Structures are given as structure tokens and as C-alpha cells.
Length: 267
Length: 277
Ligand SMILES: Nc1ncnc2c1ncn2[C@@H]1O[C@H](COP(=O)(O)OP(=O)(O)OP(=O)(O)O)[C@@H](O)[C@H]1O
Ligand SMILES: [Mg+2]
Image (cartoon, rainbow over all chains, first blue to last red; front, side, top):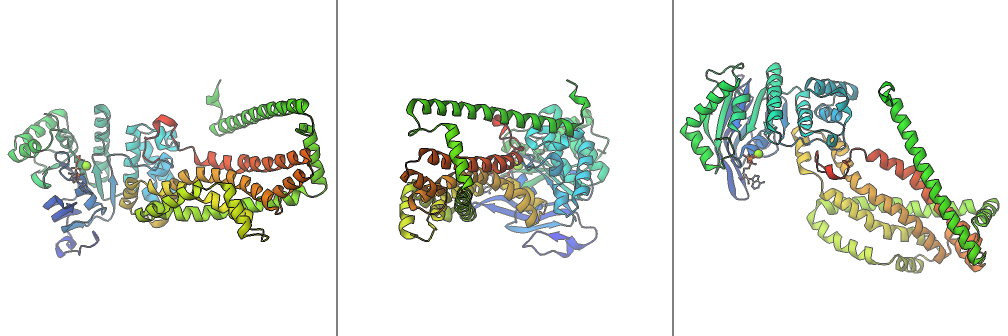
């Protein structure tokens, strides 16, 4: 297992049943202000956990802690997953590398030989809906949706057992967004990779996830966790999603969290 | 056209050949225009002021035959390229430090401005005083005048390193080698290369200038001699030699390099797509 630098592993996170990712009593200070305060959340193995909350409540900070890009000011971030992959709000592709090389970046970091990694990346790109010749293109020659597909391929290529997605589709239009949400769901279900999907849109959360954790801001904390309940993997048609969102909105903690923040999610 | 039937590789090679020929053709036309104006000037002002293009070429041929053109060209190339290489190395190092550290950047920036403001000819004079007779005057002049140009490029490159891409690389646990080769180097290159191209042209002209004034071996020395002998054809021949060398270096080395480095750049308006400069 790996524990974020500066934090000793605990017995609990070493036990076989330990979740792939857990924030335990995590606080994070930036510029003298508490961004997160005593936040505890476990991400159980398998399935998609959506992390919803108003803009600025600290979702990105929470994911950056999990990815090892930040260290908590207090508390512990326990990552027992062997391999963690991230996808960001903007694609963050290397502008001077072709789509195929970008998708192979994670494999390159793992030391996979050139031919093997480029072939794997190309196959993955095509399986995610890109045309064969798109692999040769530079990021600036791709549309926003295509770039996010490349970023998804880059994350999936390393066969992660924990996938961290930070509002990956918020810059895309509604139709494209639905396509990519379905794509992520299918890809994640096929590989049985534990996924944390951050979004400020309750609908998106209900569409892609099995569990939903609602965050409230100022300072960031978990306001409400909705378990899988009756929803199964098949339960993602529009009616079920609407029902889920309505049920969530009815919960006082969720309503309060979104009232306090800017009303980003659809009413 | 049924380009779809042609294998992409062949089509690409064909396009490149046509593009090359087109470039060659337009260069040829503009050179012919220049020669025509030159010839006209010759006919108006006479040989003493402006020898004809053919006379100049004949003078150049004589210089080559006498075995003076070759060594002079080599000496100038040594001064220009030696100074250029040194300035590039030091400039990239200093500029990177200045771009990465705010404090160092604050210290370096005024210095760069001062050095950029000093006229090149002043450096030549100083170099002649300091390095009289050692033959280092030309190299020194080249180094001090091109250094600030490279420093500025490298500093801008290091300053604009994309923190988001850096985070991405860290999230994927990229080893240092991968980060250098895939992240920092291409980014720095996109800023440093234009600076290097400028410095390259500058170094050539400065080497010749320092040689003219210092009388050290090289094309500049030949120019100085031609002036003493009031041999305008020979002076023009030296100029043509220097020009041909610089232009071939740019055409055969810098331009192909630039074409290799450039394709990832978005054409103008789509610059912001995909991150990076
Ligand atoms: N390095 C930093 N220094 C100071 N404040 C910061 C820093 N990073 C983030 N913040 C603040 O922390 C808060 C949470 O930021 P974060 O990016 O985690 O929010 P978010 O939930 O991801 O928002 P969004 O939905 O808009 O992406 C914000 O108020 C932000 O201004
Ligand atoms: Mg965010």
C-alpha cells in the first residue's frame, strides 16, 4: 500500500478489507484558510462514487490529496490501491505529443517499451470511439470531446485500480457529455475499477454513480452519503436518474449544501 | 484528384517535394530580382562603386583559387559558431535559473536589459582593447551580444512551464527522465529555439564585424584588406561568401529543425487549445 508522503500507514489501512482510498479526519489549510475540515470519507472497492458539491467546496482539493499532489494539513489520506490514474477538468495533454503518445504517457512512466505502449494506446483510443487516424493528431487538431477521450485512454491505459475523475466533462456540451458519461460507465464497469467521479452537477452524479457523497463548503466537509440503495448498474435510465436526484434534493443536508453554494446544479 | 488511392506516406512525400520545389522556386525568383537591381545599379554608378554581379562572382572565384577564401570562411565560422555555442549553453542555464527562481529572475532581468542596450560596436572596441592580439576578440563579442537574447528566451520558457501539466505528470508518477524529455525540454525548446535562431544570425554578423575592426583572421580581415586596396569587387565577394554561409546554415540546419519542432503548434487562433504555449 502507499500512504501519502508525510503520513504513516495505520493498522486499519493495512488490513485486507481496507478500502482502496480513504480520507480520515483530513483538514487542509491554504493561505491561512481552512479549505477542508476534519473530513472523513471511505471509498469502497468497486463501483463509481460520485462526489458532488457546490463550486468551491473543495472537491478538487480532495482529489489532489488522493492523487498525492497535495499533503493534508492534518489527518490521513490512505491509498491502498496499487495504481492510481487521474483525469482532470481540462484534458492536460502534452501539446507537442500526438494523441497516441499522450494516451501512452502513463505506460511510458511505468517503463513499458515503446512499441508495446503505443500499440496499446492506439487500441484503447479506437475502443473509446476515436478514428484510427486520430491517433496521429496533435491535441490542437482534436475537438474538446476527443481530447477528453484521449485523457480517458491515458488514465485507463495503465490499468488502474483507482480512477480519479475531476469534473472531466464539465466543459463539454450536453449531448457529448451524455455520450462520455456512458462511455466512462461502460469502461469502468468492464474493468471493475474503483472510481471517484467529481462533479457539481447532481444529474451527472446520479447518472454515472453507484454511490453519491454530497459535500458542503466553507470549510469543505461531507454533508450526506447516499448508498447504492436500490439502484443497480442497470438503473441509469432517465426516470431512475430523475428519481434519484429528487430523492437527494429532498434531503435537508443536500438542500442546505447547494443553497449555501452557488446554484450550479440544475433546479 | 484521387488522393485517397495513394498510400498516405507517398502522398506526404509528394506534398513535401512540391512544397520544397515551390520554396526553391520563389527563392530563385527573388534572388534574380535582386541581381537585376544590382546589375542596374552597376550600370548607373560604374564598377568602382558597384561591380556587376558577374564581376563579383569572378572575384570570389579568384579568392577561392588563391586558397584564401576557404581558411577565412573557416575562421569566421569558428568565431561565430564557437561564440554562439558558448552563449547558448550559458544563456540556457542562466535563463532557466532566472525563470524558475523569482529572486534570480529579478537580478538577471536588469542585467539583460543593460547588456541588450549596449551597442554591439562598443563591445567590439572593448574586446579589441581587452583581447588585443589573442584572436579572442571576435568570440568575445559574439558571446556578450548574443547571450542576453538567449537568456531572455530561456527565461520566458522556464517562467511559462505549465503547472497543470506538471501536476498531471506527478499524478502519473512520471520519473524525472520522462518529465525532462516529455515536458520540460519540448516546452523550453519552443521558447529557446527562436532565440537561438536569432542569436545564430547575430553571431555571424558580429564575428565579421569584429574581424574587420580587429584585423583578425577571417572574412572580416579579407573585407578590411579589400577596403585598403579599394577593390570593391573583392569586398562584394567577401560579403557574398559570408551571406551564402549564413543562409545555407539557416536553410540546411535551422529551417529543417524548425519544421521538425513546429507541427504541434496550433495555427494562430487555436493556440489555447490543449494547453501549453
Ligand atoms: N492553493 C490555494 N490557495 C488558496 N486557496 C485555494 C487554493 N486552492 C484552492 N483554494 C480555495 O479552496 C477552495 C476549494 O477549491 P477547490 O478547487 O477544491 O474547489 P472545487 O470544489 O473543486 O470547485 P469547482 O467545482 O469550482 O472546481 C476554493 O475556495 C479555492 O478558492
Ligand atoms: Mg474543481
